[in-house]
Amino acid sequence: MQFQFLDQVAEIAGHGTDNNHILMSSHSAATITPIQNATITLFEFDGKNVLTNPANKMDVIKSLSAGLITFSENEARISINNFIRGSDGPVLFTEGVSDEVILEIAWEKLYGDKCHFGIQNAFDHTFLRGLFSRTDLSINFPNRKMFALFDFDDAYNSWNGFKNCTPVEEDPYKGLAKQLSYEHHFAILLPVPQNATIKSQVLNEDDKAWAACGSSSSLSIELLFYGFEGMNDHFVEKSICGGGKVVSFIGNKVNFAENIISKLPAAAFKPFRPMFDLISRVRTH
Figure (cartoon, rainbow, N blue to C red):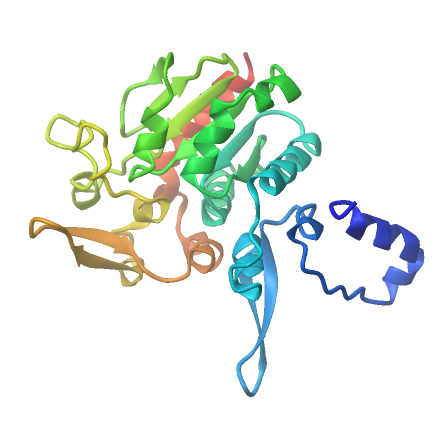
């Protein structure tokens, strides 16, 4: 009932919504779940002005309730199932909202049209692995092509944790990929960019993940744009155990995705092309 509440209110209001706003106050995260956008507008008063900023739907729920209200796993599943039922064709799941935005921009830059598969964030790599480890997706959406994209950092453990898989791409610069035990599901690791500094954070001289489990790797999706003109102000070197340093992203990820990288040329998105081509090949078979 909570999940359907907003739709019911809009239906009752009818044409009244043409000239009016509906304001609702609720303590239930489920009432926001049906909203397709993972990013919502947050209104905040800074003492003088009302500011509007894009914000992650889940983060807003947590912050407004001081952590007492959380976006539960069941509600997350409802949101994902709602997205899948409302679309057709393959679906690429990402770890976060900014990943989703970046990939949509990347496709448009590289191919000049709207992406021909759905992109949906799955909140974090732990949830993403759990989503593809269970049988829910294969039972509820049989024969639907689905892909899970993991960052090349501590999320490597989640990607590497899938067993009984068939490798379909073994070049880390194209994005390591494997077919899961359910033949229509695939797990992909973020492609490594041709940048010596970033490459050294994830691969050794043999192009293998530094640690046996990959947990010492450090490559989030934003780092694929490190080194391009005007981008380095968004990154900083951080010291790590052993006296080394790694480049890390700083700032608001959603703002970076929506307002910064969108100004880059198509060449900046080239690392994504092999992954997109893989999805396109699987889509047509």
